[in-house]
Amino acid sequence: MAHLQDILYKVSIRSIQGELDRQVDNLQTDSRLAGPGTLFIAVKGTHADGHQFIPQVIAAGATLIVCEDLPSSFAPGVTYVQVESSAAASGIIAHNFYGQPTERLKLVGVTGTNGKTTIATLLYKLFSALGYTCGLLSTVENHIGDRIVPATHTTPDPLHLNALLKEMVDNGCTHVFMETSSHAIHQQRIAGLKYAGGLFSNITQDHLDYHKTFEEYIRVKKAFFDSLPSEAFAISNADDKRGAVMLQNTHAKKYFYSLKTLAEFKGKILENNLTGLVMTINDQEVHFRLIGEFNAYNLLAVYGAAICLGEERGEVLRCLSTLTGAEGRFDYIVSPKEKIIGIVDYAHTPDALINVLVTIQKLRKGHERIITVMGCGGDRDKTKRPLMGAAACEYSDKVIITSDNPRSEDPEQIIRDIEAGLNTAAKRKYISITDRKEAIRTAVNLAATEDILLIAGKGHEKYQEIKGVKYPFDDKQILTGLFDLLDK
Image (cartoon, rainbow, N blue to C red):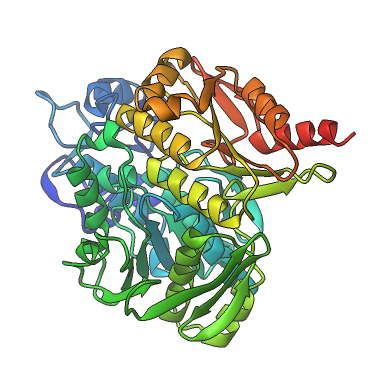
């Protein structure tokens, strides 16, 4: 319960119709859940406009309305608060309603195309190992201390997000590490939150179905850093060609990490194989359990954030050296008898797929073949499909193009879109099998001793979405079962 006047603190208000001396029992942006005591925030969403449901929520007993556009006539006893942006107001109001949780903990946001989940997960694991009670908000799962809360979006909506943050404060969390997606930034789901710091991993083509242009995608990512306060830190990848641009206008204290140029957090890879990475970080040599150049960057970002949060260098490196990454991120198993290496990875952008395949190429001793199973999600950026197919064929010896999550689209059409990017040489390397389980089975049957199989695109996901229905499907579980059969 809260007072209406108090929870409007920092909201950009245009006008008020009615009394402000009102109690608020709960917040809703979903009209179906509104009733007496509800403050209903009418948000103009991508699929529906909450303003059209205002009469419905008033009929259900709600008497407090936040909106951008006032109705032509006012219902008696109802307070209307007209704001500049309902989306931004929902975040600020939720933060106030739940007692401004980010004022009482250190919130670090991680943004970029690839690496967000691994960086956020490693930070959560690192600070937990350092003795803190931590929260994690990620694509794979959310954590409140040791308790796991299933994740439905990379970044939840403002009401659920602030409720989770309050729960984290109530459970003693001092640090929270959060993936901050471009959708969340653009839709102002993070409005009102106070960040202790922000991290940028890299930026490559993704989500153009939503942002329409790459330039707009970059602008949205940059807006996150533009909004950081002066007491926060901002850490960026100096080796990404847009790494410096991201921090151009931030008020936060700027830091960079790099493998290739001078930076506050400088790394150098000494060894990279299936036992992990040996690298120097600021001239200190450490062995890590993670594999690949992309993970070297992730480790540098995590190290930099820990130092900016005041932790001791030696203890940070000691703890980092013991950690494993996030589920479904370069997750590998080896068939005991045939020694076939199976790698499950979430790579679902051209750049992520290339990064994983280049890492695999560096791991092989010479004679092993790389067999890749890949597809592209339906109802998502179609322009990356031919690029994904071309990348898979360029860096693999054999490719099986299959279904990912076709969602509402025809899986055969998605495969045709992928095939459109293949040149003559690439067309000799691939086959298409629409059924994903059959595609993985075929890859295992094609593999010889010590070959490397990459199952790309779904990573940690435990389902396959077809025509709006989510069916149980786990790449790693299927691969493990096929390996067991192979070794009998």
